[in-house]
Length: 262
Image (cartoon, rainbow, N blue to C red; front, top):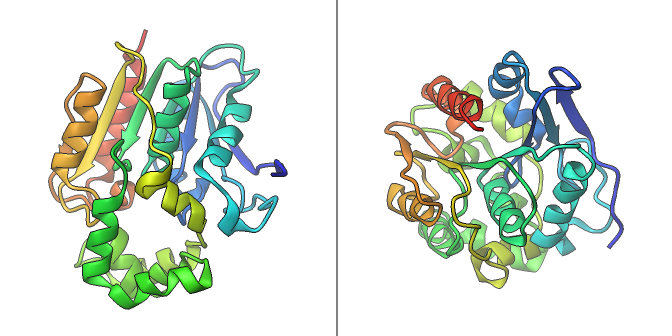
């Protein structure tokens, strides 16, 4: 598959310790802009936040539905390559799943942050939750080979990513920014391409949203256990933790964790 040029946001000093932020499905690098990018850059970090292929301002390189998790991981591996020193990886949702693939491959990193991440065991339970909540939308993705029907209205975006009491304006703004997602990457996350085990002792920070409609706190606790740690739980936070009232707390947790890495 063609490897497209990625649109990459950069912030902070050129010689700062690198932190690579990997966004989730349907999203793009804009997810990190409001809080985490300035917080890390303000602490002297060199922050790199790419749009994955076919997302945001990056070209798809091929029909998006054919893109695999391995393609996304390859894109991030290229971003990491040549940085001069191992970066910290932080991924949200599908981005966390991609980060798990990279560290299982043995890509050198200083640590991995997982924010409401797809669990290592896959997203089958999340798919069942979506099926119960929006069966017609989920069933429509296969004939279309498009994941967009799951998030193409403000109400769907609110149900998937925000709290039930999120304002209509917030839900509309989010729905307008969300894009499509790869059908094959979705299947990879369910079962077709699960990540191997990370190296023992790799520093990790796992953050769970107590009101996450996709991944439960128990699933995030199992993911944290896999990395030898325990999750930080934001009790009222939805899947898009950074877009919630508890987003600032999540930013502090991640920033403090990055600053404390050797």
